[in-house]
Structure formats: C-alpha cells, structure tokens
Length: 83
Image (cartoon, rainbow, N blue to C red; front, side):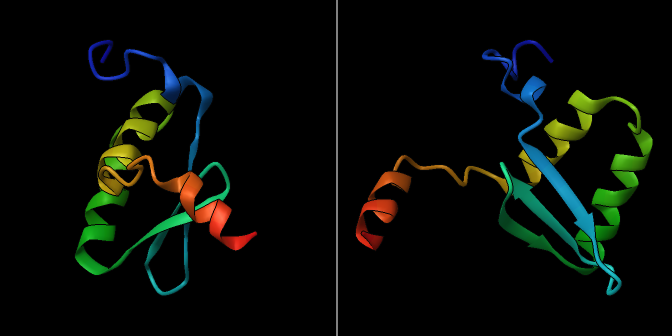
C-alpha cells in the first residue's frame, strides 16, 4: 500500500461515493461528481467495498482505481475558460 500512495493523498479521504435507488454508484472527488458506475460494474465495486469495510484507506484506493486517471493537468484551463 505504501508504494501506491507515496504522497499519502488517500489519508485525506478525497473520494466519497453514494448509492442510488437504481443501483448505480456516484463517485465524488473533493465534493465534485466525477464518475457514475452502473449495473454489473457497480455491483462488483460495492462487493469489494463490503469486503474492506472499515478500512478507509482501502476504500479510497478502490474508488481511486475505478475512476482511473481522471486528472490530466488541464483542470486549470477549464476554470479559466469560465471566467
């Protein structure tokens, strides 16, 4: 685990998730919605979360892995375009 999270970002708990009535899972990063997981993939994610329940860092790692590499360094460009 220490090799995966070298900067200890997952200790800050940046990821949260919410289950919907339809069975989808909405994943948030620092309060912003970044991904919606549906159907079979959502079921697998929830099963894995149940396996590691109580281990916050492990849940954070699962959520980080399912979101993929969503931060590419161009986030600031999007913010400046809105101004």
